[in-house]
Image 1 (tube, rainbow, N blue to C red):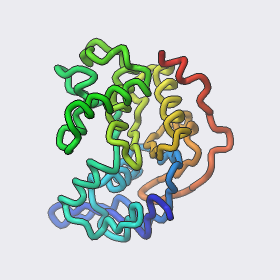
Image 2: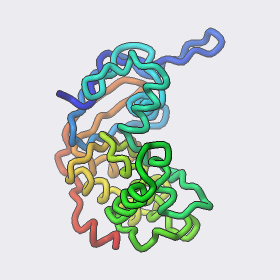
Image 3: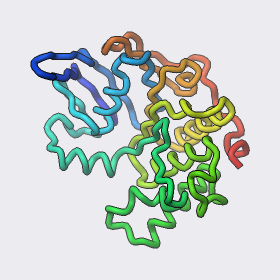
Image 4: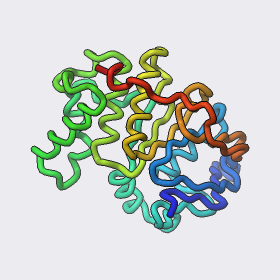
Length: 240
């Protein structure tokens, strides 16, 4: 059974009787453990699609089935529960709280769960160790490089052990070396069994995935495996 299945998915926005179509009749599946890049230019609809797949928005038509459950039928509170327990997000702008330590930033997704305080700290420490930041637990975000901030964001996305991690232009604010390290970490996580969905407009970044869905003007124009994938080599050494 596919982790994600999209059938005839459509999205439109209505503003004062003006209808703007964003996504048209999308059909695809994503299996557990895949690393898929959704690639397209600005305005193509890729971010809208990610918002729907990440339970941040609702489709206007068609079906979105997540792990066998028809998301189209869920209410807002059910979507919020799915969002908090099933997915993790990594954004271009990091979205870290500036006056909160690295460890506390990673603990945040666990605050509104039933996880005991000591267990929260243990899980957050483990997540930070997995991205090579065990020596930065008590640092503030302004004491970190851009690459380190993004690695904190990845650890935060991991801490709930989500079914899928969404990375939205994760290298957009980074230099080339830091961007490569971030992509290699995502590859390492995928090799460990995590499902990764990457949203990007950059061909080089997309080629770190195993499969690329290309979207243009709200429609999928190709769905192909990456022939010459940029495999992670020595990522754990790079991030030390």
